[in-house]
Structures are given as C-alpha cells and as structure tokens.
Amino acid sequence: MNILGLSAFFHESACCLLRGGRLVAAAEEERFSRVKHDPRLPAAAFRFCLRAGGIGITDLDAVAYYESPVRKLSRQLWAGIPEGASPDLGWLDPRAPERAIREGLGWDGPILTFDHHLSHAASSFLFSDFPEAALLTVDGVGEWATTTYGRGRGADVELFEQVDFPHSLGLLYATLTSYLGFEVNDGEYKVMGLAPYGEPRFLDEMRRLVSSGPEGQYRLNLDYFDFIRGRRMYSDALPRLFGEPPRKPEAEITRFHQDVARSLQAAVEEILLAKAGWLHERTGLPALCMAGGVALNVVANGRILREGPFERLFVQPAAGDSGACLGAAALAHVQLTGGRPEPLRHVYLGPRWSTAEIAGLLAAAGIAAEDFRDREAELLEAVVDRLAAGRVVGWFHGSLELGPRALGGRSLLADPRDPGMRDRLNHLVKKREAFRPFAPSVLAAHAAGHFDLDHPSPYMLETCRVTSPLDLPAVTHVDGSARPQTVDPLIAPRYAALLEAFRRRTGCPLLVNTSFNVRGEPIVASPVDALSCMGVSGIDTLVLEDFLIDRDRLPANWADLLPAWRERARSGFARGSSAISADLYTFV
Ligand SMILES: [Fe+2]
Figure 1 (tube, protein in one colour):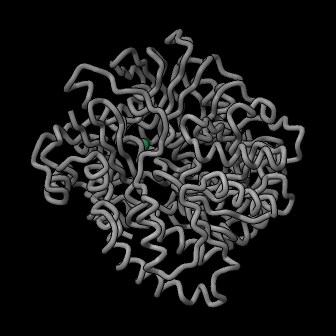
Figure 2 (cartoon, protein in one colour):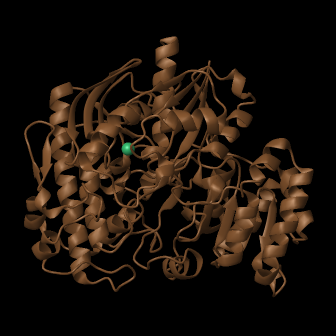
Figure 3 (cartoon, helix red, strand yellow):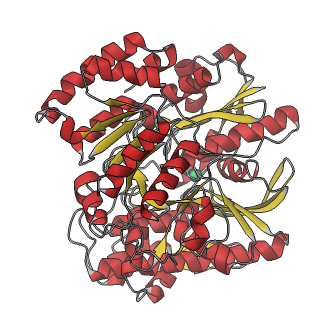
C-alpha cells in the first residue's frame, strides 16, 4: 500500500510517502524551489517522494489531500476574497486542488480528502507511540475550525469540539506579529523570541482582545481585528488600545514591543493551559498529542507539559501545514487497510546525497576540499578542532529534515560556551535580528545534567530551564531557558559521535545548533545550496558528508567565483550523478 500525502495552496506545501504504513519520505516544496514557505503545488517534493520510495506514479494506491476545498470555500465566501489572493492558489475554486493534482502531477487514481484539523490531529496521534491520547490542534484557520479537541484510540481519530473562524489563537498571534512589524506566518517565532525580554504589563489589554469561554471555546473581540476581509490583520482600534502606532518593519525594537510580545505570549499560554486542563478533564487520558502551527510555540508546550495535567506530550515536529500531509496519508492508510501507521522515529525524511556525488560536485566546481572518506573519527576530530577554536561549521550529513528545525542533517554548529558566538551568528552568519536565541543539541545521555528535562526532546519542541554547571551564553535565553534537542546515537549516529568528540575534548556535550540558512531563505537541501549559503554568510568551515572545506583555504575572490562554480557544479554534478540527484538538481 503506497499512499502519497499532500498539503498545498495555503501555507507551506509538502508531500510525504507512506509505504506499507511506514513513512519513508517527506519534504517541503520550499527546500527544492528555494521559495520560502512555497504554497504552490509540490511537484518537486512529489517526484522526490516517488523516487525515494523507489516507485513510479502507477504504484501509488491513493493521493491523500489535507483539507476539504468545498468546506474551505464556504468560509472564504463568508469572509470575502482577500486582497492580493493569487488565482494560482485556487481561491474560490474548490476543484482547483484536484485539477492541479491531476494535471500538474499526472495522477488519475483516487484522491482521498480529509478535513484540515483532522489531518493535523492524525499527523500527531497516528505517528505517536501512544495507544490512546487526547488531541489538541491549534492554528490560524483550516476550513472553518481554528482549534479542535479530540481523542485518539488505536487507529481511530475523533474530534469532538472545535472553535470556528474568526476566533483563532493563531490569527491572534499573527495579528500581534503584524502589529509588532514582523511578517505574518514567518515572524511568529521572532515574537516568541522577543517575549522573554519584556514584562506582561499589557495582560488586561490582551484579555480585551481574547476571552476564554466555556469548555473548549474562546472568542476574539472583532472590534480589534480586520483579517476577515484580509486587508490587514488589525483594525485602528488595536493601536489605540495599546497607545502606540504599529512598528514599521526593521524599525527599532523598544521596551514597548518587548512588553507587548511578552503579554501576548502570556495570554496565549494562559488560554492553552486552561483548555488543556479542560481537555484532560473531558478525556481522562494521561497523554496529549498536539499539532497545528500554534503547536510550534515551544514556550507554551513546555508550560503545558510542566504545569498542565498531562503526563506525556507528543508534538508532531512539522506541526504546521506542511506536516498535515502526514495526517492525510495516515488517515487514508487507516481507511484503506484498517491498520495504524508505524510511529515516527525521526524526521530525516528528505533527500540525501552520496559521498561519490559530492566528490563529483567538488571536482566539477574545482573546490579544494579535505577528503575524509573512510576516516570518520579523523573527520570528527578535525571538526572539533574548528569548533573549539570558535569557528562556525556548516554541517551537511544524511537526509534533510522535515519541518522547521535543523536537527543535525543541515545545521550550523558552534561552541555554546563562547560569549561572543550568539552575536556573531546572528550578525555575520545568519544575518538576522540580534535578540533571537539559539538552541543547543545535547547528547541524550547528558541532557539531565544541563537542563531541567526528564525525557527526550528530539525535535526541539519545548523549552526548559538551563541547569548546567557550564556557562552556556550562546544557547541560554534571557530568562534562563533553552530549547534543547536531545541527540540519540541510535537515531543520528554521526551527529552524536561529533557531540561525543566535542565532549571528550572540552568537557561540554553540547553544541549550538541552528538551521543551515540565512535570513529569508529556506534551509539548504542540496550540496550546492550549502556552498551558496557559505558564499553569502560567515560560515568558516563546511562539512559536506566526508569532505571538509575551510573558508580560509578558498581563493580570496571566492564570492566572485561562486556563480561560475555553481553553474559548473550544476552541469558537472548533474551529468555524473544518479537519476534522483540529477533530477532534484534541476530544481535548485
Ligand atoms: Fe493548519
């Protein structure tokens, strides 16, 4: 049984392949198209999934789509057409997704469609290892639902309560993100990162914007919002309420903005905690599964687990719309087989490149690299040399991660003890806002010695207190928290071995781990993306599988040579590489 899950035409589009109940491939379209949050038909991700699964399109049993276009239309008609809505994305045409799948992908078999929040819920529960769990999904909006509550048992997923548009915690967060001068659907992380710098002195104002209702319900006060018609997110009443005009993008961030961010975060946490409490009472279950874009609010997740009634929490790592394709595929699998998919073991589900292919690329581009083939221990020592010397290392190994977090497949790594590292990474390497924190990777066996954390956190989806005897300024946020990734040697052996080598050398079993990209770009997917990223950022050393490239050993005019190398690499690499890489390569 081969089922292709697909989400598209709203936020980030993506595909996954469920083969015999096992998730064998998944990737966001943005990683191939290099358009951040690409919402278009995920043609490249679709082709990648088929090739990674070793199958052709005729081997598919079904395509599973992540939302109901007809129900979505009824909400769109109620709300009106947003200004700037692209006809390419199928606004007001409920047949557009099916047409795109048929004509754009060439699929003429069955298309099974599942509701947006059911897909979110299934993407979490059906891939968790809980036999039974309470379900909570929270996002901006699906068809009508913005928040749902339910219960999963075995292969069954049941939603029994929902909050409908326009009342939405996701849209509340997005509205304040816009008011604070950040981009909606992208800047929410920045608001969350800004919050710990402020005081919650606008909690009363936040409670005028959103009020908790009975059971699972809550309401927005629509006097303050204008997103229904899509002209902008907030009405004139919202700046009046806070007493300051909206912040212009890139304008200075003041105490006021920090305090609004903190107050918003506090208000959202307050409602989520209350609703999680109600859901626990209603279900009586010890485990909770979450998904939807708001489930990427790692600070709220940490509080739900620490202060809420649930003993265990699973958040689907690609909790936003890209990961909803996993849920649609899982629901189709249940419908067609009666069985439940296998639990998610990791998210290294995207494309990978062999050492031979990378050797071909480097030769084609004429790039001098140190060759560590069959010398992994020496490679790791060479990387540790550089990390311990304060260098920033681009780390490219194995399959690309699904979801917003780099987890040691496409990561930028650095020494977390270095007091200047955070500013250096933000300014010179990532080229992003100075206040944004970085997360650490830590060997799973050593996590409890450095964090207030008594369970694995493999996907960086919750924050916790730093309790380390080491001073870790690069990964400790202003409030003393961090968002660790615990690294298990059975899941990510080479990355764990690198952490172990760094621990042996320095006594510190942690590294800064931030995603391998610069501001405004998707995480790198291919070796050429990685080389290009090195060209426009301050990465000191690049590790492409078994090859190590030091910036200071590259020619002085390295950046000028880059376009030509890119072109030479493109043709040389494509000629000499396997079909899958060559094919993917055309999307770079
Ligand atoms: Fe969603």
